[in-house]
Image (cartoon, rainbow, N blue to C red):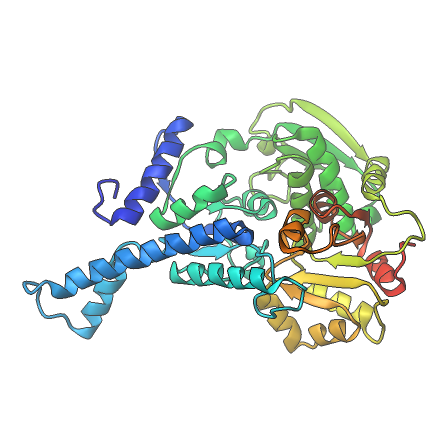
Length: 445
Protein backbone atom coordinates (compact mmCIF):
# COMPACT_ATOMS: atom_id res chain seq x y z
CA UNK A 1 0.00 0.00 0.00
CA UNK A 2 2.82 2.39 0.85
CA UNK A 3 4.33 1.76 -2.58
CA UNK A 4 1.09 2.81 -4.29
CA UNK A 5 -0.27 -0.64 -5.16
CA UNK A 6 -3.67 0.31 -3.69
CA UNK A 7 -3.76 3.74 -5.30
CA UNK A 8 -2.46 7.21 -4.49
CA UNK A 9 -5.16 8.06 -1.92
CA UNK A 10 -4.39 5.06 0.28
CA UNK A 11 -0.64 5.52 -0.22
CA UNK A 12 -0.90 9.09 0.99
CA UNK A 13 -3.15 8.14 3.92
CA UNK A 14 -0.81 5.39 5.07
CA UNK A 15 2.18 7.68 4.74
CA UNK A 16 0.57 10.11 7.21
CA UNK A 17 -0.15 7.26 9.63
CA UNK A 18 3.40 5.91 9.36
CA UNK A 19 4.88 9.34 10.06
CA UNK A 20 2.55 9.71 13.03
CA UNK A 21 3.64 6.34 14.43
CA UNK A 22 7.32 7.10 13.91
CA UNK A 23 6.96 10.39 15.79
CA UNK A 24 5.78 8.41 18.85
CA UNK A 25 8.18 5.45 18.39
CA UNK A 26 5.36 2.98 17.73
CA UNK A 27 6.84 -0.46 16.95
CA UNK A 28 4.33 -1.32 14.22
CA UNK A 29 0.92 -0.66 12.72
CA UNK A 30 -2.26 -2.58 13.56
CA UNK A 31 -5.44 -3.26 11.61
CA UNK A 32 -8.44 -1.33 12.89
CA UNK A 33 -12.05 -2.49 12.70
CA UNK A 34 -13.98 0.79 13.06
CA UNK A 35 -13.72 4.60 12.94
CA UNK A 36 -15.78 7.43 14.40
CA UNK A 37 -15.01 10.49 12.28
CA UNK A 38 -15.04 14.24 13.17
CA UNK A 39 -17.85 15.61 11.02
CA UNK A 40 -17.82 18.81 13.07
CA UNK A 41 -14.64 19.88 11.28
CA UNK A 42 -17.07 21.10 8.62
CA UNK A 43 -18.37 24.00 10.72
CA UNK A 44 -15.91 26.28 8.99
CA UNK A 45 -16.04 26.84 5.25
CA UNK A 46 -12.38 26.01 4.69
CA UNK A 47 -12.80 22.66 6.40
CA UNK A 48 -15.86 21.87 4.31
CA UNK A 49 -14.04 22.72 1.11
CA UNK A 50 -11.09 20.57 2.17
CA UNK A 51 -13.30 17.59 2.99
CA UNK A 52 -15.27 17.91 -0.24
CA UNK A 53 -12.05 18.23 -2.25
CA UNK A 54 -10.69 15.10 -0.58
CA UNK A 55 -13.83 13.14 -1.48
CA UNK A 56 -13.60 14.41 -5.06
CA UNK A 57 -9.99 13.22 -5.27
CA UNK A 58 -11.07 9.79 -4.05
CA UNK A 59 -13.85 9.65 -6.63
CA UNK A 60 -11.54 10.81 -9.43
CA UNK A 61 -8.97 8.14 -8.63
CA UNK A 62 -11.65 5.46 -8.63
CA UNK A 63 -13.00 6.70 -11.95
CA UNK A 64 -9.54 6.62 -13.56
CA UNK A 65 -8.88 3.12 -12.25
CA UNK A 66 -12.27 1.90 -13.45
CA UNK A 67 -11.76 3.39 -16.93
CA UNK A 68 -8.35 1.73 -17.13
CA UNK A 69 -9.82 -1.62 -16.19
CA UNK A 70 -12.64 -1.46 -18.72
CA UNK A 71 -10.29 -0.27 -21.48
CA UNK A 72 -7.93 -3.21 -20.99
CA UNK A 73 -8.69 -5.30 -24.10
CA UNK A 74 -6.48 -8.12 -22.86
CA UNK A 75 -8.67 -8.67 -19.79
CA UNK A 76 -11.12 -11.58 -20.03
CA UNK A 77 -14.77 -10.76 -20.66
CA UNK A 78 -16.32 -9.74 -17.34
CA UNK A 79 -19.66 -11.06 -16.23
CA UNK A 80 -21.96 -8.64 -14.42
CA UNK A 81 -21.07 -10.27 -11.11
CA UNK A 82 -17.31 -10.19 -11.65
CA UNK A 83 -17.49 -6.64 -13.04
CA UNK A 84 -19.19 -5.52 -9.83
CA UNK A 85 -16.53 -7.28 -7.76
CA UNK A 86 -13.81 -5.49 -9.74
CA UNK A 87 -15.47 -2.15 -9.13
CA UNK A 88 -15.66 -2.82 -5.39
CA UNK A 89 -11.98 -3.75 -5.42
CA UNK A 90 -10.90 -0.50 -7.05
CA UNK A 91 -8.91 1.75 -4.70
CA UNK A 92 -9.68 5.06 -3.12
CA UNK A 93 -13.39 5.62 -3.30
CA UNK A 94 -14.46 4.07 0.01
CA UNK A 95 -13.34 4.00 3.61
CA UNK A 96 -11.68 0.70 4.54
CA UNK A 97 -13.70 0.08 7.73
CA UNK A 98 -17.19 1.00 8.99
CA UNK A 99 -17.00 4.73 9.73
CA UNK A 100 -19.62 6.69 11.65
CA UNK A 101 -19.70 10.49 11.80
CA UNK A 102 -19.87 12.85 14.76
CA UNK A 103 -22.07 15.94 15.10
CA UNK A 104 -22.52 18.79 12.63
CA UNK A 105 -23.57 22.39 13.31
CA UNK A 106 -27.14 22.10 12.01
CA UNK A 107 -30.02 19.65 11.71
CA UNK A 108 -29.77 18.53 8.08
CA UNK A 109 -33.04 16.59 8.16
CA UNK A 110 -34.99 19.66 9.27
CA UNK A 111 -33.34 22.69 7.64
CA UNK A 112 -34.13 25.98 9.31
CA UNK A 113 -35.53 24.41 12.47
CA UNK A 114 -32.65 25.52 14.69
CA UNK A 115 -32.13 28.98 13.21
CA UNK A 116 -28.91 28.05 11.44
CA UNK A 117 -28.08 30.53 8.63
CA UNK A 118 -29.04 29.11 5.20
CA UNK A 119 -25.52 29.64 3.84
CA UNK A 120 -24.07 27.56 6.65
CA UNK A 121 -26.69 24.86 6.14
CA UNK A 122 -25.69 24.70 2.47
CA UNK A 123 -22.05 24.17 3.47
CA UNK A 124 -23.08 21.40 5.85
CA UNK A 125 -25.04 19.72 3.08
CA UNK A 126 -21.82 19.64 1.05
CA UNK A 127 -19.93 17.92 3.85
CA UNK A 128 -22.69 15.33 4.13
CA UNK A 129 -22.37 14.60 0.42
CA UNK A 130 -18.62 14.20 0.79
CA UNK A 131 -19.10 11.72 3.62
CA UNK A 132 -21.61 9.76 1.57
CA UNK A 133 -19.27 9.51 -1.41
CA UNK A 134 -16.52 8.15 0.85
CA UNK A 135 -18.82 5.47 2.24
CA UNK A 136 -19.03 7.05 5.69
CA UNK A 137 -22.24 6.51 7.63
CA UNK A 138 -24.29 9.66 8.15
CA UNK A 139 -24.95 9.15 11.84
CA UNK A 140 -23.93 12.66 13.01
CA UNK A 141 -23.95 11.82 16.69
CA UNK A 142 -21.65 11.90 19.70
CA UNK A 143 -23.04 8.55 20.90
CA UNK A 144 -22.61 6.01 18.05
CA UNK A 145 -22.64 3.19 20.62
CA UNK A 146 -26.38 3.83 21.01
CA UNK A 147 -26.84 2.99 17.33
CA UNK A 148 -25.27 -0.45 17.59
CA UNK A 149 -21.64 0.46 16.90
CA UNK A 150 -20.18 -1.59 19.74
CA UNK A 151 -16.58 -2.62 18.97
CA UNK A 152 -15.61 -5.96 20.55
CA UNK A 153 -13.52 -6.08 23.69
CA UNK A 154 -9.83 -5.64 22.88
CA UNK A 155 -10.40 -4.52 19.29
CA UNK A 156 -8.38 -1.65 17.81
CA UNK A 157 -10.41 1.32 16.63
CA UNK A 158 -9.92 5.04 15.94
CA UNK A 159 -12.40 7.53 17.38
CA UNK A 160 -13.04 11.21 17.92
CA UNK A 161 -15.55 12.88 20.29
CA UNK A 162 -14.39 12.73 23.89
CA UNK A 163 -17.52 11.08 25.28
CA UNK A 164 -17.41 8.34 22.63
CA UNK A 165 -13.67 7.74 23.02
CA UNK A 166 -13.86 7.27 26.77
CA UNK A 167 -16.94 5.02 26.50
CA UNK A 168 -15.31 2.78 23.90
CA UNK A 169 -12.18 2.46 26.03
CA UNK A 170 -13.73 2.15 29.46
CA UNK A 171 -17.16 0.54 29.18
CA UNK A 172 -16.53 -1.68 26.13
CA UNK A 173 -12.81 -2.32 26.52
CA UNK A 174 -12.08 -1.49 22.89
CA UNK A 175 -8.80 0.36 22.34
CA UNK A 176 -8.48 3.85 20.92
CA UNK A 177 -6.58 7.07 21.38
CA UNK A 178 -7.95 10.52 20.62
CA UNK A 179 -8.21 10.22 16.86
CA UNK A 180 -8.32 13.82 15.72
CA UNK A 181 -8.18 14.69 12.04
CA UNK A 182 -5.87 11.74 11.35
CA UNK A 183 -9.03 9.65 11.68
CA UNK A 184 -9.65 10.42 8.00
CA UNK A 185 -6.45 8.62 7.01
CA UNK A 186 -6.99 5.65 9.30
CA UNK A 187 -10.50 5.24 7.90
CA UNK A 188 -9.11 5.13 4.35
CA UNK A 189 -6.12 2.84 4.94
CA UNK A 190 -7.47 0.78 7.85
CA UNK A 191 -4.29 1.16 9.94
CA UNK A 192 -3.15 2.89 13.14
CA UNK A 193 0.16 2.89 15.07
CA UNK A 194 0.39 0.54 18.07
CA UNK A 195 0.82 3.14 20.82
CA UNK A 196 -0.92 4.99 23.63
CA UNK A 197 -4.08 3.34 24.92
CA UNK A 198 -3.76 0.53 22.41
CA UNK A 199 -1.03 -0.84 24.69
CA UNK A 200 -2.07 -2.82 27.79
CA UNK A 201 0.60 -1.22 30.01
CA UNK A 202 -0.87 2.25 29.39
CA UNK A 203 -4.35 1.14 30.43
CA UNK A 204 -3.39 0.59 34.08
CA UNK A 205 -5.28 2.65 36.66
CA UNK A 206 -3.26 5.47 38.19
CA UNK A 207 -5.47 7.16 40.83
CA UNK A 208 -8.03 5.63 43.21
CA UNK A 209 -11.26 7.49 44.06
CA UNK A 210 -13.40 6.13 46.88
CA UNK A 211 -16.91 7.44 46.27
CA UNK A 212 -18.66 8.35 49.54
CA UNK A 213 -21.82 9.90 48.13
CA UNK A 214 -25.48 9.07 48.99
CA UNK A 215 -26.98 6.81 46.28
CA UNK A 216 -29.75 9.30 45.48
CA UNK A 217 -27.13 11.83 44.36
CA UNK A 218 -26.05 9.34 41.69
CA UNK A 219 -29.49 8.47 40.35
CA UNK A 220 -29.51 11.09 37.56
CA UNK A 221 -27.24 12.01 34.67
CA UNK A 222 -26.39 15.40 36.19
CA UNK A 223 -25.10 13.68 39.35
CA UNK A 224 -22.77 11.44 37.36
CA UNK A 225 -21.80 14.45 35.29
CA UNK A 226 -20.81 16.38 38.42
CA UNK A 227 -18.86 13.37 39.70
CA UNK A 228 -16.93 13.11 36.43
CA UNK A 229 -16.14 16.81 36.38
CA UNK A 230 -14.71 16.70 39.90
CA UNK A 231 -12.59 13.60 39.26
CA UNK A 232 -11.36 14.76 35.85
CA UNK A 233 -10.14 18.03 37.30
CA UNK A 234 -7.94 16.10 39.74
CA UNK A 235 -6.41 13.49 37.41
CA UNK A 236 -5.92 15.47 34.19
CA UNK A 237 -4.94 12.90 31.57
CA UNK A 238 -4.39 9.98 33.97
CA UNK A 239 -6.56 6.85 34.45
CA UNK A 240 -8.94 7.12 37.44
CA UNK A 241 -10.37 4.08 39.22
CA UNK A 242 -13.74 4.75 40.90
CA UNK A 243 -14.67 2.45 43.80
CA UNK A 244 -17.79 2.37 45.96
CA UNK A 245 -20.33 3.14 43.25
CA UNK A 246 -23.83 1.58 43.15
CA UNK A 247 -23.93 -1.98 41.73
CA UNK A 248 -26.63 -1.15 39.18
CA UNK A 249 -25.48 1.53 36.76
CA UNK A 250 -27.34 2.72 33.66
CA UNK A 251 -25.67 3.24 30.31
CA UNK A 252 -26.62 6.93 30.16
CA UNK A 253 -25.01 7.50 33.57
CA UNK A 254 -21.72 6.05 32.35
CA UNK A 255 -21.92 8.18 29.21
CA UNK A 256 -22.47 11.30 31.33
CA UNK A 257 -19.60 10.34 33.63
CA UNK A 258 -17.19 9.84 30.75
CA UNK A 259 -18.18 13.06 28.99
CA UNK A 260 -17.53 15.06 32.16
CA UNK A 261 -14.21 13.31 32.90
CA UNK A 262 -13.02 14.37 29.47
CA UNK A 263 -14.29 17.94 29.97
CA UNK A 264 -12.51 19.01 33.15
CA UNK A 265 -9.50 16.82 32.34
CA UNK A 266 -8.28 14.89 29.31
CA UNK A 267 -9.34 11.50 30.64
CA UNK A 268 -9.48 8.84 27.93
CA UNK A 269 -10.03 5.76 30.10
CA UNK A 270 -11.53 5.02 33.53
CA UNK A 271 -12.18 1.84 35.49
CA UNK A 272 -15.02 0.89 37.86
CA UNK A 273 -14.19 -2.39 39.67
CA UNK A 274 -16.87 -4.97 39.04
CA UNK A 275 -18.42 -2.94 36.22
CA UNK A 276 -15.92 -2.18 33.46
CA UNK A 277 -14.32 -5.15 31.65
CA UNK A 278 -10.67 -4.54 32.54
CA UNK A 279 -11.42 -4.06 36.23
CA UNK A 280 -13.21 -7.12 37.56
CA UNK A 281 -11.37 -6.37 40.82
CA UNK A 282 -9.53 -3.40 42.28
CA UNK A 283 -6.24 -5.26 41.86
CA UNK A 284 -6.97 -5.91 38.20
CA UNK A 285 -7.76 -2.22 37.62
CA UNK A 286 -4.23 -1.33 38.77
CA UNK A 287 -2.69 -4.36 37.01
CA UNK A 288 -1.31 -5.54 40.33
CA UNK A 289 0.31 -2.21 41.17
CA UNK A 290 -0.49 0.56 43.62
CA UNK A 291 -2.30 3.86 42.95
CA UNK A 292 -0.24 7.01 42.68
CA UNK A 293 -2.78 8.81 44.87
CA UNK A 294 -6.00 8.02 46.76
CA UNK A 295 -8.95 10.41 47.09
CA UNK A 296 -12.33 10.33 48.79
CA UNK A 297 -15.22 12.01 46.97
CA UNK A 298 -18.02 13.40 49.13
CA UNK A 299 -21.34 15.11 48.57
CA UNK A 300 -19.64 18.46 49.17
CA UNK A 301 -17.40 17.85 46.15
CA UNK A 302 -20.46 17.41 43.93
CA UNK A 303 -22.07 20.52 45.42
CA UNK A 304 -18.96 22.49 44.49
CA UNK A 305 -19.37 21.48 40.83
CA UNK A 306 -22.99 22.70 40.75
CA UNK A 307 -21.90 25.95 42.35
CA UNK A 308 -19.10 26.41 39.81
CA UNK A 309 -21.49 25.86 36.89
CA UNK A 310 -24.16 28.17 38.36
CA UNK A 311 -23.68 31.68 36.98
CA UNK A 312 -27.40 32.50 36.58
CA UNK A 313 -28.81 34.35 39.61
CA UNK A 314 -31.83 32.79 41.31
CA UNK A 315 -35.04 34.14 39.82
CA UNK A 316 -33.29 35.41 36.69
CA UNK A 317 -34.76 34.92 33.23
CA UNK A 318 -33.72 31.87 31.19
CA UNK A 319 -33.77 31.90 27.39
CA UNK A 320 -32.39 28.43 26.59
CA UNK A 321 -32.81 24.93 28.04
CA UNK A 322 -30.69 22.07 26.71
CA UNK A 323 -31.15 18.35 27.29
CA UNK A 324 -29.14 15.69 25.49
CA UNK A 325 -25.41 16.26 25.92
CA UNK A 326 -24.30 13.65 25.08
CA UNK A 327 -27.22 12.76 22.81
CA UNK A 328 -30.30 11.35 24.57
CA UNK A 329 -31.47 7.78 24.07
CA UNK A 330 -35.05 6.67 23.44
CA UNK A 331 -35.89 6.16 27.12
CA UNK A 332 -34.66 9.63 27.99
CA UNK A 333 -36.84 11.10 25.24
CA UNK A 334 -39.80 9.18 26.67
CA UNK A 335 -39.22 10.73 30.09
CA UNK A 336 -39.05 14.24 28.64
CA UNK A 337 -42.21 13.62 26.63
CA UNK A 338 -44.08 12.60 29.78
CA UNK A 339 -42.82 15.64 31.70
CA UNK A 340 -43.90 18.02 28.92
CA UNK A 341 -47.14 16.37 27.83
CA UNK A 342 -50.01 18.85 28.04
CA UNK A 343 -47.75 21.69 29.19
CA UNK A 344 -46.16 24.65 27.42
CA UNK A 345 -42.63 26.08 27.33
CA UNK A 346 -42.57 29.76 28.28
CA UNK A 347 -42.44 32.38 25.54
CA UNK A 348 -38.93 33.49 24.65
CA UNK A 349 -37.36 30.20 25.76
CA UNK A 350 -35.68 27.88 23.26
CA UNK A 351 -35.79 24.32 24.58
CA UNK A 352 -33.71 21.74 22.69
CA UNK A 353 -33.69 18.01 23.33
CA UNK A 354 -30.74 16.69 21.35
CA UNK A 355 -30.46 13.17 19.96
CA UNK A 356 -29.39 11.33 16.83
CA UNK A 357 -31.58 11.10 13.75
CA UNK A 358 -32.23 7.35 14.13
CA UNK A 359 -33.41 7.69 17.72
CA UNK A 360 -35.54 10.66 16.75
CA UNK A 361 -37.24 8.53 14.09
CA UNK A 362 -37.99 5.86 16.70
CA UNK A 363 -39.25 8.52 19.12
CA UNK A 364 -41.53 9.95 16.44
CA UNK A 365 -42.96 6.49 15.83
CA UNK A 366 -43.75 6.24 19.55
CA UNK A 367 -45.28 9.74 19.69
CA UNK A 368 -42.57 11.20 21.94
CA UNK A 369 -41.38 13.80 19.43
CA UNK A 370 -44.93 15.03 18.91
CA UNK A 371 -45.55 15.37 22.66
CA UNK A 372 -42.31 17.30 23.17
CA UNK A 373 -42.83 19.63 20.23
CA UNK A 374 -46.50 20.28 20.99
CA UNK A 375 -45.20 21.72 24.25
CA UNK A 376 -43.03 24.19 22.33
CA UNK A 377 -39.71 22.37 22.68
CA UNK A 378 -37.68 21.02 19.76
CA UNK A 379 -36.17 17.57 19.24
CA UNK A 380 -32.91 18.28 17.45
CA UNK A 381 -30.73 15.77 15.58
CA UNK A 382 -27.25 15.96 14.01
CA UNK A 383 -26.08 18.77 16.29
CA UNK A 384 -26.20 20.45 19.71
CA UNK A 385 -25.62 24.01 21.00
CA UNK A 386 -21.88 23.36 21.53
CA UNK A 387 -21.39 22.47 17.85
CA UNK A 388 -24.05 24.78 16.43
CA UNK A 389 -24.09 28.15 14.70
CA UNK A 390 -24.51 29.77 18.12
CA UNK A 391 -20.76 29.76 18.78
CA UNK A 392 -19.65 33.37 19.17
CA UNK A 393 -17.07 33.09 16.38
CA UNK A 394 -19.66 31.69 13.96
CA UNK A 395 -22.24 34.30 14.96
CA UNK A 396 -19.78 37.06 14.14
CA UNK A 397 -19.01 35.46 10.78
CA UNK A 398 -22.69 35.31 9.83
CA UNK A 399 -23.86 38.56 11.40
CA UNK A 400 -25.83 37.01 14.28
CA UNK A 401 -26.20 38.41 17.79
CA UNK A 402 -23.32 37.75 20.21
CA UNK A 403 -23.94 36.15 22.60
CA UNK A 404 -26.72 34.24 20.89
CA UNK A 405 -27.87 32.86 24.26
CA UNK A 406 -28.00 34.78 27.55
CA UNK A 407 -28.82 32.14 30.17
CA UNK A 408 -28.84 28.35 29.59
CA UNK A 409 -30.05 25.63 31.97
CA UNK A 410 -28.83 22.08 31.30
CA UNK A 411 -28.36 18.66 32.92
CA UNK A 412 -24.86 18.28 31.42
CA UNK A 413 -21.70 19.73 32.93
CA UNK A 414 -20.03 19.33 29.54
CA UNK A 415 -22.66 21.53 27.94
CA UNK A 416 -22.48 24.08 30.74
CA UNK A 417 -18.70 24.31 30.55
CA UNK A 418 -18.40 24.59 26.78
CA UNK A 419 -21.29 26.95 26.07
CA UNK A 420 -19.90 29.26 28.72
CA UNK A 421 -16.63 29.34 26.80
CA UNK A 422 -17.86 29.10 23.19
CA UNK A 423 -21.22 30.89 23.25
CA UNK A 424 -20.49 33.21 26.16
CA UNK A 425 -23.72 32.66 28.11
CA UNK A 426 -24.46 32.18 31.79
CA UNK A 427 -25.32 28.65 32.89
CA UNK A 428 -26.94 26.49 35.56
CA UNK A 429 -26.58 22.72 36.08
CA UNK A 430 -29.56 20.76 37.38
CA UNK A 431 -31.55 17.56 36.80
CA UNK A 432 -34.15 16.90 34.10
CA UNK A 433 -36.99 18.06 36.34
CA UNK A 434 -35.15 21.31 37.04
CA UNK A 435 -34.52 21.86 33.34
CA UNK A 436 -38.20 21.34 32.51
CA UNK A 437 -39.26 23.67 35.33
CA UNK A 438 -36.93 26.38 34.01
CA UNK A 439 -38.29 25.92 30.50
CA UNK A 440 -41.93 26.14 31.61
CA UNK A 441 -41.45 29.17 33.86
CA UNK A 442 -38.73 30.97 31.91
CA UNK A 443 -36.87 31.45 35.20
CA UNK A 444 -34.02 29.81 37.09
CA UNK A 445 -35.70 28.77 40.34
